[in-house]
Structures are given as C-alpha cells and as structure tokens.
Image (cartoon, rainbow, N blue to C red):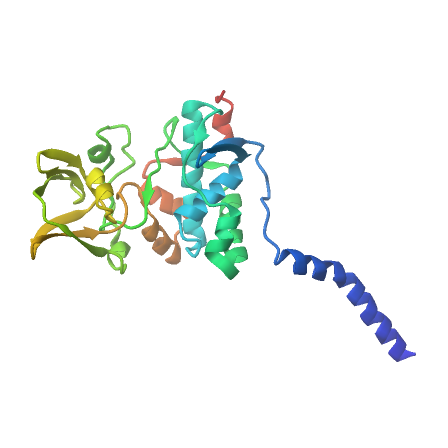
Length: 294
C-alpha cells in the first residue's frame, strides 16, 4: 500500500512538472520580460528600413551595443539613464515622429554575440532598464547632453573646449585614474609617411586640429580617417613611416564607461556615478517632459 502511494506521488509530480519541462525544452531558459512596458514607441532606422518598436526594446538594444553586458549592475544602470536621456532629448527636440538612427542590437544579434551567456546578460540589461524606469538627467529645465565613451586617457574633457559653448557646464574635466591601468590604454598604429602635425590640443590632451599637407582636419576627423582608437594621440616619424600612439578609447567627453564600471565595483551607486561625470545634473522622471512633446 505504502509503495503504491509513493508511486502515485511520483506520477503526480511528473504530471505537474511536465508543462514546465516541455516549455524549457522548446524555448530554452526563461528570459525576464519588461516589468512595465511603456506605451511610448519610437521609429527606428535600421539600414534602409524604418520600423516602429517599443522604446524599451530599442534602448535595451542600444545598451547591448554600447556597453559590455559583463559590466557591474550599477554601471549598467548609469548607462541606462544616459541612453534614455539621449533618446528622449531627441524626441523633445524633434517631436514624436523623430526617426532614431543610433546603432542597436536585436535579440537575435545578442544571442549570436553572447551564446550561452545570452539569458544572463539579457536579464542584466532588462533589470538595469527596469530599475531606473523613467529616469532621465536634467540640467536646470532642460534634458542634459549625456555623451559617453569607452576609456579615457586618465581624465575626461571640458565641454566648452570640445563643443565651443557655455551651455554644458556639467561636462567638466574629471580624473579617471582607473582608466590608466587598463591594458587598452595605449595603442599604436603605423601609417605611411606624410606631412602632418598636430596644431591644437585641449587641456585634457585630446587633439582639436591637425594639419595634413595644406588641409586642416579636426582631431575627430583625423581619428576617423585613420581608424584610431582615441582622439588623444601623438604623431612621430619612425623608419620612414608615421607612428600614431593613442591613449584611451573614444572621444573622451562625458562618462568613461570603464571608470563607471570600476566605480561600481568599489561600491558606488549609479546615481553617484552619474553625478561624478555630469556634475550638477539631477535625475527626474521622463513623464515630466512627455506632456510637452507633440
């Protein structure tokens, strides 16, 4: 009798678990869904195609493209606020019919890039988005400009020097000692000899202008032309070629993602990280600005 009861109990457990087992077998491990799907949708351009998608889907795709999903939770949350701020700033400037053209990853691209780590990494991004739901950065009455980049040369750049405007006093030079220790801090590129010299650099050491022959290029134009990792670089003739040595990765203005991650590992929260890189800004709810958007 007791044996029969045990068998019946086992059968009941199997019956109860069967739907779950089948679901996992067919669909793989569960993925966290958005906890509060915003009704706002945006037009997104991918290649030559313009499509409508929920703002969460687009922004999480931008997160996946712009910051390593392996980074700490608080760093990802800081990046989520930065991405949301930029998207809503564009909507605020051009209206709800604006077409967003920033690069992003689809879920299929995330799966291809992350492989077996896809469920873990995707859930981290969704959590970062949901944990900062509706939060954007303001400076005064306006949405802040929130540039970011991967790795500084040891400090960030001054907004006035880079943008030529006093409108962004929160984009200041701040120290990033963590960045100096990264293995990608210094990189070297060799190119054919040319008549070139750096004619102007800013206070942080990033190049503002370069003369190439009779042509003057901005530092970012030169960086793009020669595929350089950073806008902070030096030029040196070596064995009949030009050796270009860069420091850091990216344009150097705003938030250093690498420093943000290191700060998070040291216990800093996402709002403290944002305040460090965008001093004087404040976090507000995006609902406060949507009513003004037509």
